[in-house]
Length: 335
Image 1 (cartoon, rainbow, N blue to C red):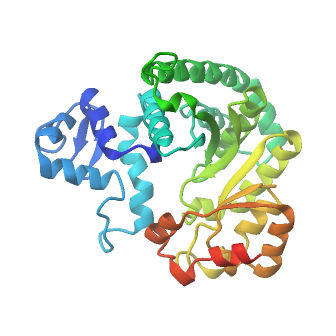
Image 2: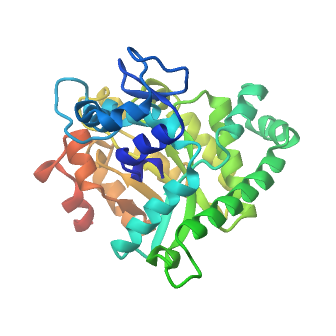
Image 3: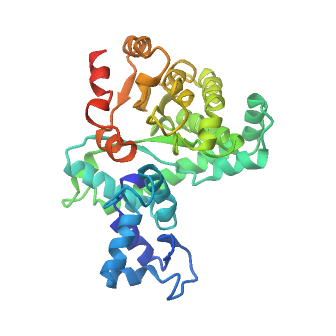
């Protein structure tokens, strides 16, 4: 959800809420502000160069090679605008829904964390022993189910606000009122294992309790140290939970990697394990498929399983540098 909101909107939220901008990192931060290093966000509205620099920092606009990598710039943007985004879920939803309707989109499936980090906090409090069954019992005993209930109420309230903002049920109703909205809960793969498991468990429980929560995904950069180190562990967590909650849909970003980002062995199995171990029905990106072990066998198996692959050409070009003949789209179509 946050990644679909324009940077100008976040700057407006920050100014409205009296937040500040850290000039060194071009991040939205909470007060106190000071004119030199942490000016009020509202000052950007009267300072065009500052405003433009801020938009570039909070988005991929005008990114050029050399200052940082495209992937690092992209993923770091989320932490830069988080303080502005978090208090405004209804406004963000309204913007994305209205724009989608204007583009004739009828159905949205948004990656969103509506518990606002509480599930991961429960995991942090429980700690990691390596025993997923025991950890699940601990989390269920530590009010995770109450969190499911309160999150459903939060979604109810947020969607009521969205309907009001879009003027649904009135003669001035925005076309977005007709868009169907569902949610995929993205566990953050860069967190410690106990927090990742808590988020995954919460996602599976929420999907059982609320039809708006259609499944689970995993977010954060796949090439970072912890996501690479814990990849097999995450797949085993998903396998364990899938056996307990077989009706929950699983859609995983996998293979959003390019040659040279990680050692070659890091490219050999993420797509295959996402499908065969974690039972993913959909793969996000799948760019490195030809670096997998036995890639042709994998492509044939994906076709037999009817595994959906979400192809993101612009993202893969800008963020991974994979374009044209180097992109596997023709291979996916062939098989």
